Image 1 (cartoon, protein in one colour):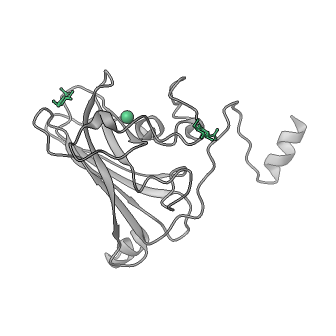
Image 2: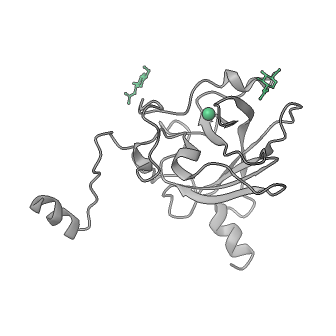
Length: 196
Ligand SMILES: *[C@@H]1O[C@H](CO)[C@@H](O)[C@H](O)[C@H]1NC(C)=O
Ligand SMILES: *[C@@H]1O[C@H](CO)[C@@H](O)[C@H](O)[C@H]1NC(C)=O
Ligand SMILES: [Cu+2]
């Protein structure tokens, strides 16, 4: 205990859990944007995008999520999956979650300890998808464990997003594609441009 308090007074952080924590990504590319757009499918109303932005300090990746057509009264989950969606749009061919540290999805992600969750478990780390009837689900957050650097263990830019019903079935999915920011520096530059 003394040792731990000593470290804390030095401003260091210790994890209290047994699971090996995912490292914070601190070398992300500021100017890169990756966006995944859900497919047009005729057996689900769920549509939308997950857009990611590098930031000037390179620590973590900013994520903006907008999903419409969320079934009334349901809370959906969504993840980054380990393979892209193939040409035929089959969300079941995207393998499991992005999980470079082999944690698996058991036990479930604890939102209070996101560093111990599967890297791809976005709803586990940041809350599930819910919206009042007729409204969109919107969320913006920084994810400290995904990476927009090709070749990094936690790189997601060539992978997919899958949205699931409560029973785990796969409602919709889409692949990330890269778009360079026309303002050069990801979300910070965008916000500066619009005077925020
Ligand atoms: C996770 O499992 C894969 C496949 O078995 C293996 O190649 C990889 O080295 C493992 N990674 C870690 C961090 O244990
Ligand atoms: C939607 O249709 C596809 C292709 O027929 C099927 O694989 C999938 O299970 C369906 N999804 C739902 C939620 O019914
Ligand atoms: Cu999933």
